[in-house]
Amino acid sequence: MGYRVVVVGATGNVGREMLNILAEREFPADEIAAVASARSTGDEIEYGETGRMLKVKNLEHFDFAGWDIALFAVGSAATKDYAPKAAAAGCVVIDNSSLYRMDPDVPLVVPEVNPDAIDGYKRKNIIANPNCSTAQLVVALKPLHDAATIKRVVVATYQSVSGAGKEGMDELFEQSRNIFVGDPAEPVKFTKQIAFNVIPHIDMFLDDGSTKEEWKMVVETKKILDPKIKVTATCVRVPVFVGHSEAVNIEFEKEISAKEAQKLLREAPGIMLVDKREDGGYVTPVECVGDYATFVSRVREDPTVENGLSLWCVSDNLRKGAALNAVQIAELLGRRHLKKG
Picture (tube, rainbow, N blue to C red):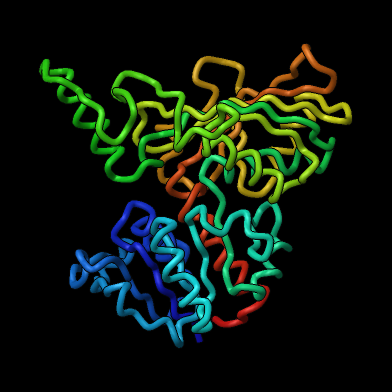
């Protein structure tokens, strides 16, 4: 006997990817419901590449009673309205929005990093998925922290436009086309031109001069990995369609060499180490699209601090940064608690 699974926001970038990954990983689902807003009601959407079509149901009228797991891929406003209803109906919510991430009664889970945290889900029947840039970072940090205890992390992100949804991808495409033909490339979704440019601004500014995206990386890393780790982040939007990259500098309490780090990363779950010190001996965003792994390259010692390393980290943000991690949480939940299939 398998699960009854709801994908909320099934017609968006992340929702579609959730359906793809559920199918690819052969998640033991007896029934799948694709749910979205009223404007998509009645549309048909494919369940992965199975050829099976799902008719989209209206979120406003959907009854979550009798369903086991709901993967939420909608904004915080809709999540605030409907996630508690689903949870109250006995359906475990795995939420991709930022709404519940810092709620002390909601576990924030990356299965390769803090699987035991999932045991706290019963307090609200909700589990939070981290920010896309945080997810790949903590996967890379986990084995190194276990071995040498991280004191401080300095990270600069290079985040693709798909992190801003379909509108972000459309804007990059349209601006690039307009520039080639000599038409104006006015920003709409982003604060400045994104085509052939980089924008050091993701989400709203906070009082201390950081952005909310940067704040998320700091507090989420602490909640998932270790509250004692000091983190500072600069989050940048780049003209890449899919795939987030991060330049990470790490300071440790204990000595760790680049060779030791490479060995740990090579053996760690969820990581693919591609680190040849030659032309092309590293992974770029274009190469990570469609892959499950978090790729790590350019591992090297930092001689400017005691016990320091630098590395390059790349992942498909629609997958590990969102949909894949949510499905992995569902798999973990099934193994540890729901016990079906």
